[in-house]
Length: 210
Image (cartoon, rainbow, N blue to C red; front, side, top):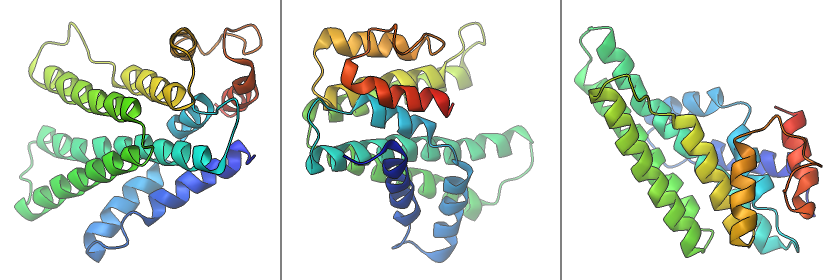
């Protein structure tokens, strides 16, 4: 069994290598955004939620790919939001730069989806697809709607990441719901929670590193 810290390093390595086949300029642009994601906290949550009762090399590879998928998804979101920041300054945006930003974000979205597919778990892939839809619809509502009902992107990300991870771990539905509910109240004590026993050590590490 590998440690949580080692698996986080493996996720970081995947993120660092995703731009190898890209044009150098586009590659560096994406790498800059990847470097900004230093904590990989969302990935750590996935690695805790997806830890199974009986681990294996295949299980490990699948949860690392899922963690990398969720982290890369946040990179894609951050890249696309750069266009909004530019628009808000009311400065003219160079078409080539704007086009490159869109392409970079789309590339990260597609690679994130491909990583999620490597879990070879249809339920997990479905959760990831639903998350993409929620993020798109929620951000569009925030952009064009009123501020009375703001979209909580972080909550949606963490709940979906936890649900996908727990599903990958093979938890029962009641255990999945308990884990998702707990992630929304992180001040709760791990040992006093309804988290499954074989995941508590990892959740404790996530909480200590928060």
